[in-house]
Amino acid sequence: MKITTIETIPIRLPTRRVHQWASLTTPIGVYVIIKLHTDEGLTGLGEAPVLKDWGGDHGKYFGETPETTAHIINGILAPALAGQDPRRFESIHVLMDKAVKGYPYCKAAIDGALYDVVGKALKIPAYQLLGGLVRERVAIAHSLGLMEIDKAVEEAVQVISEGVKT
Image 1 (cartoon, rainbow, N blue to C red):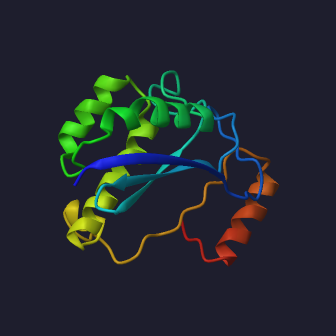
Image 2: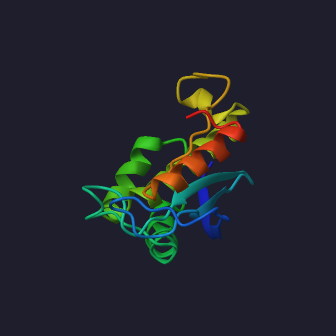
Image 3: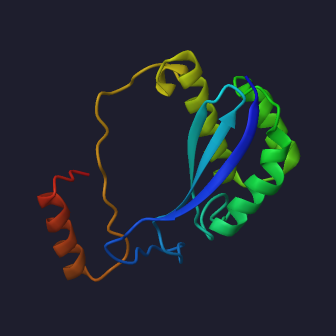
């Protein structure tokens, strides 16, 4: 099995409001979905959150935008990985690090797609490749961010009524 192409698909999810916290100054809900294709007709999916001023050492080094993410994946990482066996996780990590420094969100999206496509090839869920199921359900969390206290209380009451517990 060999990697043939990697597609990038920028998406923007609807948000309730602008989310703010101390070191984040960009809207949340912006992602780049990737499709990693193989010569066996399998497609693995991965996702990169794109926050231009978040990540690494307090955001100093690894901020990514939809444009930089698409450029790094399409122009640098995809060509470096074409023809590689997606089952060789460690060697692919080495190739990505040789191709470009930083950009952990781009690389994480590819990593997720690798596990997805290998799981599909083996006809097992990707989590089995990572040591097995840890829990049956995932708790949904909600972050209030920075806002006036009365608005924070109102929002907390709203999300609790929607079933969010953390």
